[in-house]
Image (tube, rainbow, N blue to C red; front, side, top):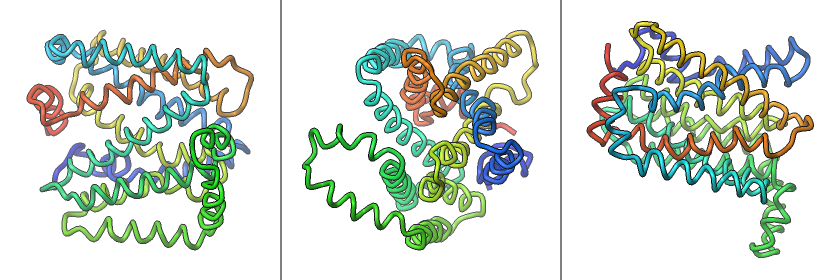
Length: 321
């Protein structure tokens, strides 16, 4: 079986199946008598540190030559996209939020596929299709449950008005918890039916179930922490293995850690105010959202192990013992 982290407990809980997030989050909600502080804690410790970790690729001198040779893809285009996204958000804030959510869904699902491939002996297209299908089905259900009313006027400005009737029928189905549980069980069963080792089965299962909280919880921030929190956890442990594992904690590493912590606190506090409807000017909220959009784009290129430089600079350290 392939191994990323030699510590089996750490690998299971942070890469293969980060189920610990669910009980810890709800325990904290009970202790603090509400979701506000637990959400902020997870957003800072996992969420925004995960976004900040993208910049480690640029900070690492081993990647300097690759970045210089691909300035257009890795510097100019993401900066242009970030500026355009920010300007779009100033004029059409809700549309920017929607586009960011779509980009996030694609990005998170692609990582689930990537984790599944890491532990695979060979590529299984059926399993990957299963992960794609479950992710986007659960996201669509989540969108309708949490955001349909907010975006209905916008959507029906260019979609057929009679589509609203079908959405109402769909709402009846997705509110049937027995049906939703049955769907989740079926996806889970197919995910672990693959003839492979236990690690690969758990990586399949995590990919399939990652967005399942969107079917059951009543608040979007609960769904984000429980579901996307698993993605954050995986991303952080991968970056730890590449950039900090067995590395000397010199001044440069300390400055990188300080950057990640500072970034996480600042961006986490801003997004916390947004999710809990605390008064905050939209231009300030667009700062972390734009940085996230930058992350979604760049990550599509810095984890491509089909590229020789990525295999040598990233892959070699990811799979090192």
